[in-house]
Length: 233
Ligand code: G3P
Ligand code: MG
Image (tube, rainbow, N blue to C red; front, side, top):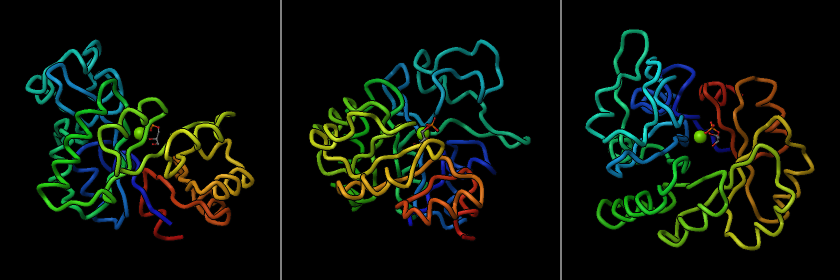
């Protein structure tokens, strides 16, 4: 079972920062999950929210997309007196250096082309493998567009509840996996997805009982803010 650190080891370190990704590697996670958006000057940065306010603690900091990378780098997204910058996706690749797989969630608009290009560069020039990555999104059309830029990378559709049109989606997009919230998931859905050749990765699993339940259901992977919790079970 794939043990994935949600936004890095975000239960211990500020989410989506190099500290959180290093912590996930130290905890022997198999994969880190992260969220990407584009800066005003079209740099791919790793950040969850549309707005900067929550992570920077600054009210009215506004939308990430309105700042150039050099301006974003001035924000502190650390905690406990340990400053952290917003990383670029490339900085995360270099930090991770193939020690774990990377699940890139395409959160922001127009990220697909830039992420596809970066992956191609790391595969063609730096010896990375396509299997080092999974690209995921709540938006099936975004996954389709990404597939046009980089057709060899695995695709995961994210959902809270399994969409009613999942069968037709599976026929039109070459989905490797569905990344589904554990809240509404049923064991029958896990079996049905498996019967359709699709893997099931469950988010966000932060309790021991839940870890045990989804393992019994034969989920293929779990995302947790506390990746060490996944190791103990
Ligand atoms: O990829 C699973 C999960 O990260 C989706 O929700 O809001 O944490 O990005 P969110
Ligand atoms: Mg995410």
